[in-house]
Amino acid sequence: MQKSINSDTSVETLNSTRQGTGAIQMRIKNANSHHDRLSQSKSMILTDVGKVTEPISRHRRNHSQHVLKDVIPPLEQLMVEKEGYLQKAKIADGGKKLRKNWSTSWVVLSSRKIEFYKESKQQALSNMKTGHKPESVDLCGAHIEWAKEKSSRKNVFQITTVSGNEFLLQSDIDFIILDWFHAIKNAIDRLPKDSSCPSRNLELFKIQRSSSTELLSHCDSDIKEQKPEHRKSLMFRLHHSASDTSDKNRVKSRLKKFITRRPSLKTLQEKGLIKDQIFGSHLHTVCERENSTVPRFVKQCIEAVEKRGLDVDGIYRVSGNLATIQKLRFIVNQEEKLNLDDSQWEDIHVVTGALKMFFRELPEPLFPYSFFEQFVEAIKKQDNNTRIKAVKSLVQKLPPPNRDTMKVLFGHLTKIVAKSSKNLMSTQSLGIVFGPTLLRAENETGNMAIHMVYQNQIAELMLSEYSKIFGSEED
Image (cartoon, rainbow, N blue to C red; front, side):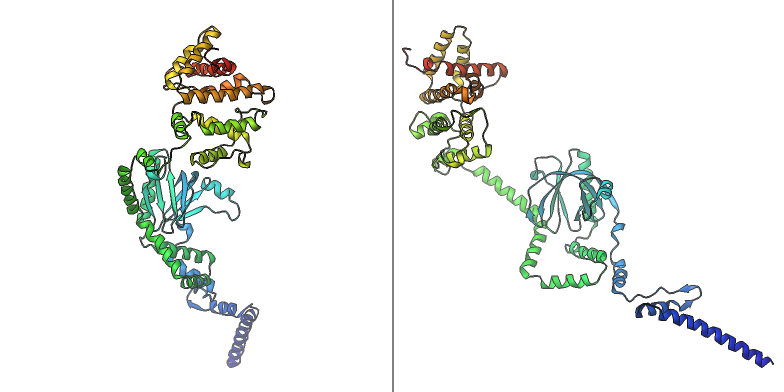
C-alpha cells in the first residue's frame, strides 16, 4: 500500500514537472529568433540564491556600448565650468584665414570644450531648430594667448586649436575677460598635451553617438587610404599652431628693422618708384608737371559736365557713387589715359563728385590760407562796389595756378546758374556746395559757423559778379 502511494506521488511529481517543462518549451518555441531563445533560456539559470545573471547580448551595437562605456565618459557628464556673453570672431577655419566679423555669443566652457551660442543656452535649447547645433571647440591641445595686434579693440585674446581653427574673444570689462582667460587656460592645462587626442576623441564621440562599431572600421580605412600629401598638410597645421608665437615675434623684429631703414618718400619719388599723384598734390606742383596753370583733370571734368550735365537736376549737389568715384580717382593718379565719355562714367554725378574731391583733397585750398582773412574782411564791407573791388584786387594777387584755375571753375559755374530753371541750382546753392571746399582757414580757432557764412558769401559773390571780378583791370 505504501509503495503504491509513493508510486502515485512520483507519477504526479513527474507529470507536474513535465507540464512545467512543456510550458517553458512553449515559450521558447514562440520566441522570435535564435538569439532571443538563447537569451531567454540562459536568463532562467540561477547561479546564486536570489541572484539572476545579466543576459549576455550577442548584438554588436550593445557590445560597442559596453566597451566605450569604460573608455570615455558620456557627453552629459562634461560639467559646465563657466558661461556668459562675450564678443567672438572666428578668423581661421582649418588653417584657412577668414574675414574678421565680431558678434555677440553666449559662451559655455566645460572641462574639455567651448560652445558658442547665438543666445543664452537655456533660450537656445528651447528655441533650437531641428538640426541646429552650437559651434563647439575642442580644447585638447589648444593654445591661448593675448592678441593685442589682431584687433583695435581692447582686452582681446586668441584661442588656436590643433585643427587650425582660430577664435578671438573680447570684452570691454577688464575683470570679466581676465576671468575668462584664466578659466580657459586652466581647462587647457588640465587636458593631455598629446596633439592627437582631439582627433582620436572626436572619433570616439562619433562612435558613441552612432552606437556602431562599423563606423570605427570605416574611419580606420579612411585613415589608411589618406594620401601622403594630405597627411603632410595635416601635420603642418598641427605644428604651425605650436610655432605660431615664435613666428610672430620673428616677423615683428624684421618689420621693425625694415621700418627704421626704409627710404624716405622723397627718395622713392626721385628714383621713380613712387609717381607724383594728381589727387592730394599741391596745385602748383600739378601745374608745373603739366606745364600749365590749370590742371588737365579740371578741364576734362568741366568739358564733360558742360557737354551733358548742364540740364541735370541737382548737378554738383547730388552725390555720385563713391566706389565709382574712387575708381576714377585711381585711374587719374596712375596717369592712365582718361576718357570721360566712356560708358563707365555715364553718371555725370560721378564726374562732378570726382572734381569736388580733387579740390577738397588739395593740401592747400584753391583760396590759399594766407588770403583767407583778407577775403573775409573784403566780404564784410557794406558797400557792394567796394566789396567787389576788394575781392578783385585779392584775386589778381593770387599765384597764377590759383587765379587761372579759379577763373575757369567759376566761369563754368556761371553756366550752371544760367540753366538754374532746369537744374535747380541757384547761386546760393552752388555757394553752399563750393564755399567750404574752396575756402577754409588753416587753423579753425574761431567760430566755424561764422566762417561757413563767409565762405558761402564769397563763393556767391564770385559767381554773381564774375565778369567784374575776373574782367580786365580797367573794368
